[in-house]
Length: 147
Image (tube, rainbow, N blue to C red; front, top):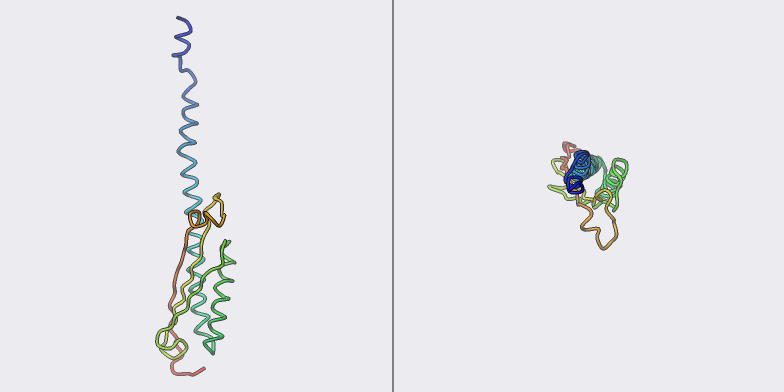
């Protein structure tokens, strides 16, 4: 009879239950906070890179130079702000003549962002990373001055 009471005695199990419950709840919450932080950082970096590339584009004299400089400035801006797993994709489109007065340019920058603590093998990369993108449109305000 004494051994039965010893088995039913739950003295000291509250601390163990608290630790187990805290681990089960705390680990996913910490991972979610880390993941959201990485994604938000990448979103800020991509937004800044698109905005900077659009501004640089309209300041150039020729479309070929402008495209090259805008792509390089987007890549440099991204690498300064966030670590990247892949090279960014920079897409440039024009409306009404990119470098003409009243024209506008739209720069779209997308990049894949790896989630923290997950493997980045080529076979599983599509499941362990997210694509983050942003676009920015800049008007050309040269008011009839040809480059």
